[in-house]
Image (tube, rainbow, N blue to C red):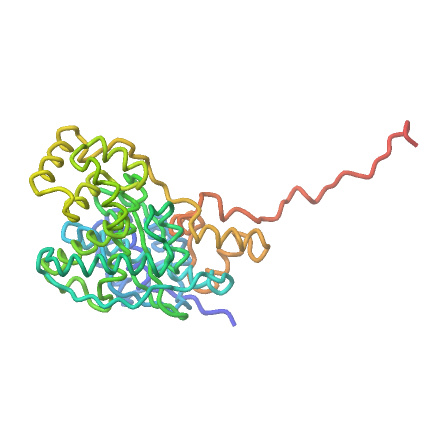
Length: 399
């Protein structure tokens, strides 16, 4: 039985925040009064069809999107943003909503695809606001060592961290956010089949070294910190402590204690030597210098000298060997390709399936949310040229 369509004010509010608009901004774009938009969102008034069309164009969602209720049952917990104190609430809300839509799409893919199950060990970690005590550092070292052993990674450089995270049940994607504004964020989503951790990194301004550190940082939050509380309610000091701990974890995880100590020890105060190590570890020079200081391979004075040298060379912002990072061929791309290549769905049929479940979106939106290659959802369409064929023709000379 088909569902009855009616205007859904919650969808208008969600799409508005998805785009990062206030009611005032949307009013200026659509030429619909702020009061009317507020009434639409609160379900106290139904817009005329012409106004739905204006809203659809302004927010970039199909008109049907505003006439649906979703079949998907998902709930989201805390969302960890790097530099939470400097990112506006409007920006955070927009990205959180995007991950919620991604989770709904994931639920549909989950019906057909056997994704890796979540594999993380039990971690007993006590939160503290005290700055880098020896006990805190050792606890985080132990967690980094435990997850490497649990995943069978040994103590050598990790070549493809995105693949490791996805192999162990996490989803990695990227969004159209400036890395200077939002580096990365992570979110735990509770779906029908259990919990899923989503890690999102900026699609712009990222280098390979920075993206890897961002992913490791978010993994630190997943392993070390609680997900059931509202991060808006914790103090700035508490949040900074968690950011610091996630950074320490990222360094310990990417640069394991004994192996990296052996590597850095020959020339720990020579900047060019760190450039040599960057080729092996794919971690920024700044992060390696800080890790050497943590491991007491260099003194505080030597650490300060090296950081001054970084600044003098202009390497604090742009280091040598920095290569742009673009997230490609993630697990969601593989899942959609598998459905299309095995004739389970064409791209168009997948969009129709989502619409049937109450999530009508444009193909470009879905591709951006899932970090798919543009044109992926155009695959698998019926080739209209095949209504004509060559005849089995034998030329007279061959008869």
